[in-house]
Length: 375
Image (cartoon, rainbow, N blue to C red; front, top):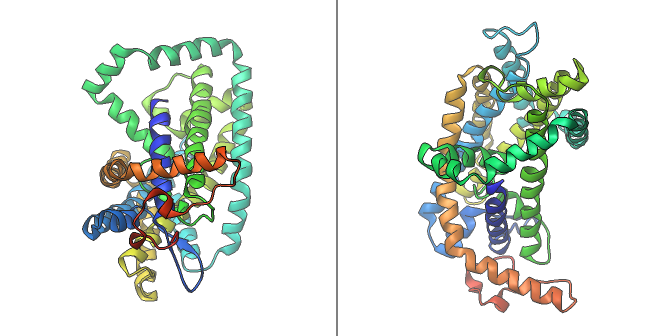
């Protein structure tokens, strides 16, 4: 909850900066950008820009995909056919092959089907969570009281700082919405808007929806289900058991199908960021076909490895690589925050005057030599 408010602010800054310093492909007309570009253009540091890209490739090509694959296979752990020595290998192998096919240019129908189904599954999940909440409505006051009691228990907060519990919570918050990490700006830069702040506000809203709505609904649903949390059912199995209190055997199956769809699109989405990073390192275009083929095969192999790797290795590697991105991006956002806030004031002034805000870099005193799109 704390991180939602902090994360929304950082999401606004980084996405607004990505829009301001984005560049345009003269051949296709498409825009691209992200932290590497505003680090290079505004701070004039290619060294730190390349270091950020290195961590981004490591995070989304390896760390997050290991973790995503691991979490996916855990949704099968509650079924009678699950064998901890064989089942993860089979699941990892199937998804590694599907990812490889899509990366090699095939599987377009698979991608299209998942793009249609994922939003539907997301809506159905929220409805299912609400049904579980209402089924356990008598437990809801106690759960809400417990949440607020713990949220504003300052003794626990400062004790958590000493024991690294707060840090642990922030890290898991980063996995949820990735605000401040520096990944979302790579996608935000491609949006076609008349003012950078528009995209910053959209990204800010997405953090609230993700953290305060979806994550909070999941947490309250699980806590009100009367299922005692334990190490054996941590993660997706805990959600499966919470749903099974109302939907019986259908609940776990639904979560398995939903997780499979979410995980598949996440795996491919992560590699979108990887491609953006490789393009930056290779003078704004992807490396040759042979390199990309080998690289994509390695990425597919990571999916297989993640399914069979120990949980702590997956989490630790993702923590390290994501931490590298964040430790570069957050200080940069602080240094360049004034630029984003100046853009916000310009946006608010135009809105107050009844206009549809349009951005002109000179209106907030930006150096036009540092810009490509908004000149």
